[in-house]
Amino acid sequence: MGSYKYSSRAKDKTTFFSEIGNIAVFSGRTLRYTFSFPFEFREFLKQCYAIGNLSLGLVAITGAIMGIVLTIQSRPVLSDFGAEAMLPQMVAVSIVREIGPVITALICAGKVGSGMGAELGSMKVTEQIDAMEVSATLPIKYLVVTRVLAATLMVPILVVFADALGLLGSWVGTNIKGSVNIVLFFSHAFSSLDFIDLVPALIKSFFFGAVIGLIGCYKGYTAGKGTESVGVAANSAVVLSSLLIIIVDLVAVQITDLML
Amino acid sequence: MNSSSAEIFTLHQSPQKNTESIIEINNLKISFGQQEVLKDVSFNLHKGENLVVLGKSGSGKSVLIKCITKLLQPDYGKITVLGEDVNSLEGKKLAELRKKIGFLFQSGALYDSMTVKENLEFPLSRMEQKFTKEEKYEKVISVLENVGLKDAVNKMPSELSGGMRKRIALARTLIVDPVIMLYDEPTTGLDPLTSREISKLINEVQQKYHTSSVIITHDMDCAKETGDRALILKDGTILAEGKLEELENSDDAWIKAFFGKT
Image (cartoon, rainbow over all chains, first blue to last red; front, side):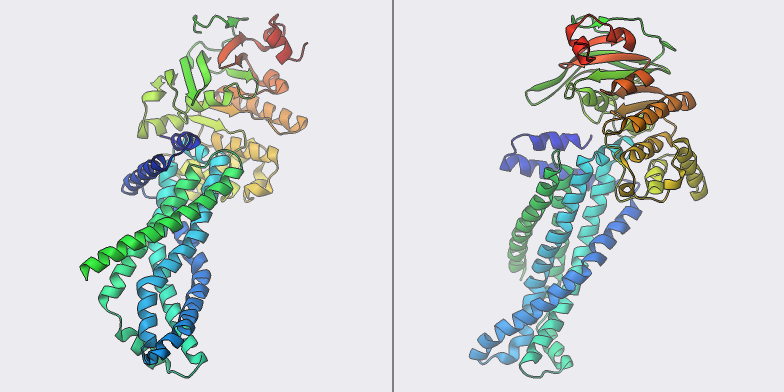
């Protein structure tokens, strides 16, 4: 039942495959409790605020800089091919399809995933998770399900926000050397975007969010004893979720490619 | 007691206030990897009594009370709490039993992200009986008054001292009117004065809430102040059980050393 099942497993010499197995069991339990009542709605809203609102500034700055840099770097190459007019279209496709979702997810893995790993790891070390369990509360339902769902919902919203700021940054970048009307810029940018560009990118963002939430919570929930394990949990949450984001992206691109 | 445990000797027929067993533990064994922590532990907790469990660090005292609440699953043995076989309980039934048990953790285990009020309201919100905001607040204030910390209601755990944290943690367990109290080293890390206050509080809780308690400690003053009966755990087995003053006068060399008499 309790958190110790995972911790005692984590204490063993963890092999690559046992880790995968443990993550699968943990994900299965999380999924099972996602659909059981009562739902911890207040905690879910609190986590949505923590993940969404408190990451907004970071995502906005990163998105805007991403757009500016991409534009400045791409301009000379397109200019060499005499395709400078295609700059808004190229940047829009790059940001919406790939760079926006992946960079936002990686930033969230760093900020949100490490936060979850550290918070739950610290709760584990100080016996707060045990205290919750003896208060007749399922920690996996109260702590994990709410965080995973909040991350799954908030990351796609942050991706849309980062995409928008990225395009705006691109317009700023275009105007560093020259002058382009914002309406004209966006009209060109959107002319290259189809429904098929937006939907797969948004769908994979949900998976990125789920990965960040699940791995962050798993690493925190299975943290060992002692304060050192809190740092280890936070660190490994970032490393593993970043790696999984890239793998999920690879799979998503292959699936999208097959569908097109 | 398990007769197969040759080392165990009873020094005193305990002063049982009531022979009705609240907790029965039979042949409990648990190991972590190659390390056997509890080897064959059997004992009863009687209604209304304070049972002190003594032993060196690492002797399995905390593991023992975690098994009682099924925070840890033993490898072997039967644990009966309030007539229920704990090992076979799952889901709602286990939750119902846990609502009758108060567990004071060594660190207090207050939820860092919540205020004292929210910490105390948390177990209330898990009860089947629904309380209005006013009722919850009344209960919170009432238990805080019982532990002498009414003014701390809006403080964060990080603003409290070690002793205050323990008191608040105790209040959090008391708010749901537990039948059994499990104290995991309640005075560890506290100064002698605060330790005495906590020990006094444990006795007050027993009298006011009519609880039966298991007190894990290696603080002799706390044990003497609170215990009706005591067990000594050594190497995962019960070395001795009886009244504390009689254990203190035991001829066993290890027990003498434990009580600092050699």
